[in-house]
Image 1: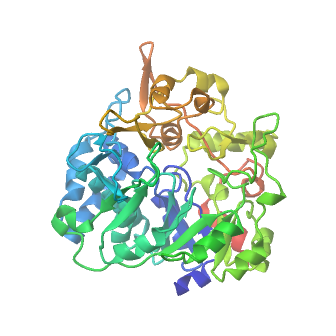
Image 2: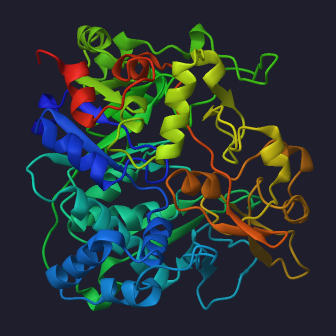
Length: 515
């Protein structure tokens, strides 16, 4: 992956559709080969299904779906458009029809798993063909749109915690000529090898985390590209994208660099000041008086050990100006990854109202420590940065007033019921932000639901795709949740302390001045 040596600035893959194809395209075009644009791979199936129901403004979704079908001689894109497109868009008070949830079943269907196998072989589970096609099609579309009209590089970002859709969306992105994949929020060991296997359309398997499995028992979801659209996607080899792992400390760098399958091509070294999900602090969890997890010197990476791994790396979290960029280079990094500065640019997918609210708070003198808090709101159990904006799920009153519902399910855990008399178990899915009674009925503990917010619905609302909820004869959108890093110096400088709008080109110039 020689091209990585010239990459100095990687745009972060933020939220659900904040790092959309428009933002990634603008970054990649600005200084091709030096800057990399990144699309977020989280929830693309939900995003595209909802955009089609809004009438596909600009026709971009339909254009990308037609490109998929034409390029590979399939009808996957047409089926998706036919299923969800509404000419002129749905009515404002009409609910979105949801994309199908990612439900796996044993061979033959149903949700019953036999007693643990004595041979110790992994148990295969299967995803519905329609769901797989939607994931592939939307992964293709987002990257295909981002790559139009320039020769720059486009990456895609995934959360390892959202494990089931990852491999399908990645394959779709590779069909569009993806240049690189970035994976965080968990240990991505094995995915670099899967990426290589998908180049030649080989079968790969996603190992599923399963609660309450028996000792030594394991489950996986096989994916054979030849079974999709009668093998129409598999006629020619694909380009092998670079693979970067997001890590916080040197121990995971060392483990991945010495992987028994295939090492990554490089690392993003993410400090805990970065936005979105963060690695938990080392050692026992200690919180301050506001409930924020406390980090210490044990959470600072050993850069010499990281350099000794011999793979390129980029620094992330607080590297939001040219001086910090030069410091990263002095540390031995190829460059930096920047998120929050891009999230507040006019080119990002964040709703204009939330950009304005953040900039107004800055203009009115809000301090970083008051504007962004590190919370334990996420159902993943990972710390999650949240902007403290009125009318959002950051407010206790908004959270308390929202009816708990889990109708998207990206962060659901999978588990097994207690064994029946014959040893068989039922598969279930649960989320700690879902209705409490349902969570507890699926072997969950009630205290694990405390303070948990629905990120799926909240992040979709942040980009203007919130579900419609009815209350007392009126309708409104699901309340948003806005994530941001808690080092806002770059945003303050670029916006002139909240007084001015700015664009991708301003962020790039601010970081790479003189490069």
